Image (cartoon, rainbow, N blue to C red; front, top):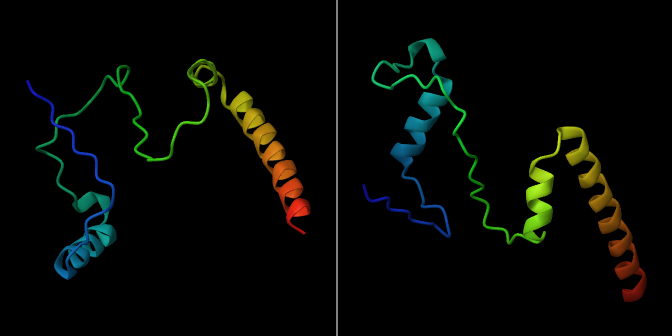
Amino acid sequence: MTIVRNELTSKPQLTDEQLKRLQQVEQMPESEINTEDLPEVLDWSGARFRNRDNTKQVLDNDISLWLAQQDNETKRQVNNVIRSFMAVCQHREAAVTK
């Protein structure tokens, strides 16, 4: 089986008709959505999250792999450390430009 991937650099514009249909579906209660033709997935153990964000990875691969294995509290703490460092750098940059 051939897998075809197409990476979009920008989102296509939706027509007025498509926007109207999306609004209708958004307002539809879940009980009215027919999912009978969709197979039920019971085993999600092999599922992988694919980040479709086009931002460049800035962490080294070994750090990314380690961080992915950590619990949410550790990830939150690492995020806070990075934010603190970012704030210090922004403060320094602001002081230099004055």
